[in-house]
Length: 133
Image (cartoon, rainbow, N blue to C red):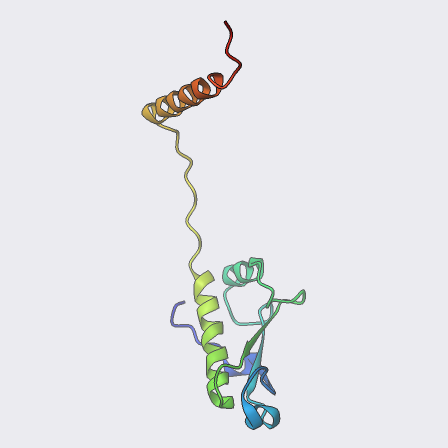
């Protein structure tokens, strides 16, 4: 899955004017790329789709459409390539299923260290009380 490339027919591009500084060029050239990728109807395997939709990512809307905006380059083509690259990296990050957590018991030594620490702390706090004659 790490060498996955999105099919061209699943990508929808729109180009807008980039934000921020850039002089005269930024005001008249639509070089920022908006990539729209519908996760639910894509050709990704079902488990990868589920993990992608489960991400707490503001770029994925309620309909399951991922919107990536790229505007760091001056040319439309480079921004388009940057958006596709970000999509590939995002899919690669969820492609491998997460490891199952195996619960472990604390060791006897770690329990004793914890209790010793608690006893020391208790002694320190007990020493803060009023002094009796």
